[in-house]
Length: 393
Image (cartoon, rainbow, N blue to C red; front, side):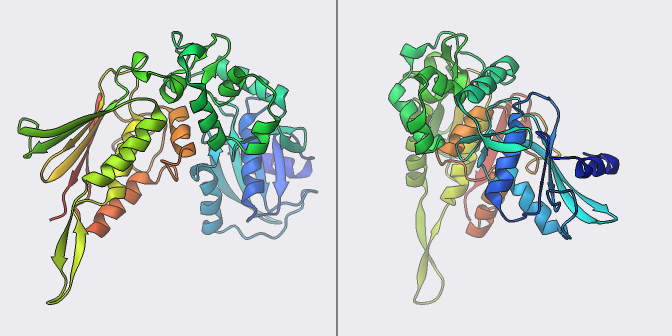
């Protein structure tokens, strides 16, 4: 973060493409647009941008009192899933002789273009605005050069003829505002590349694009499916009474899984008084859904192993290939957040299967507790991640 001397220098200087000042604390759109613009770093400074909250345009302070609640609200910009891919940012409070300010430091994204509610915001000098086609192309090309995650790398064998373009139209309608799509004059390759689903220089899909849009994702990602087994007992060696494989493009697989999981949960009457009873559920549907969706989002797609969903008589197991990733360790889980597959994570947010980043496991544990289930158990291994959910007694 900034030193106090650097902050004072920014307050005394004019606004630039690395510094914006505002007195607003409640205009979420304005604050999120600023974060998005700094993350895109169109001038390519490769240095952080700073949003100084509590300062007037002339650099004088507004008299803001920086509370813990304000800092938490500002932190929500990163986790609410409206700025995608999720920006790398930190927030701090500064107490100066003239008063207090909150400062959001936003680091340039390795996966531009970054969008807020589907629109790409940039800074040119002190001005913030929406990127034009040329700006967007620059950011897309820069992302290709910096590609650092597997899902953004080119899937060389998966060319345009292997993709279902109608699936892209459906996905784009959820990811980008209708007026932006209507004004778009670029070919479909460039439109897909802007959403990190296509690599223009190699004329092929990225691995995320192959998963989301290809006619047969298993041709490129052999382990990209969910294997379900219903077992009459408590061990995988007991009798299997039902099995099913969920595969296909990500959109259809998520939709099929969502409906299937709801049908598996059973309810039973439980007396609450001499004359009255209530329906109770073996598992809260939402918690099981969350653990399965997390497995799809965070799994290691380079692995040929599928996600295993095993439903035993008294517990459910969800096992996904790939251990913990990045900043997430056994000590920091589930409070830390990192993304092995940031484009897949973005797609699941766009499609409505993730509602807020970094809160799913905690919310699922809350749902289990409220339903009367024991807390989920987690097993961390270098090559897999296992969640065990016990049935309500």
